[in-house]
Image (cartoon, rainbow, N blue to C red; front, side):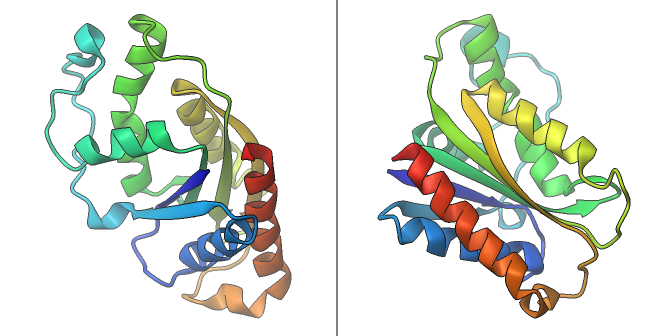
Length: 189
């Protein structure tokens, strides 16, 4: 069993990254293999609506997404982890999500993507404490998962944390991330 973590923060050792690593520790404790993709280190062009994917399920743009598609399809579980920028996921994450139009085309247009029973979770960290801080991002991640057969089953949403590493002052949040990793591993097991 394998969980793929998509780390959407441009800052390594950021709050988002530290929470994802805690979730990985929880999953590893359940004998689940983990792999992290640091989206900011990749070259991912935005979707340009060429619609080549509607013909054969493959994006015509050649970049680092070519290596991401098979990882997304092979994972038994996925954790999307992103800071919240202006009430949405980071631009890096959004580019990756938008390029998964190719997977959507495979599933809903070409109907050649099998129904899968994979599970997904969302970790998000926002600096503000706005009431609707996570609403838009949750919808984006749910529809991202649905596009290629992943059920949204868990989330960890942290408000009021901004400075790099500040999450270390919140041991309950770190424990919650660990538990999220454990639960996700159990659900895919």
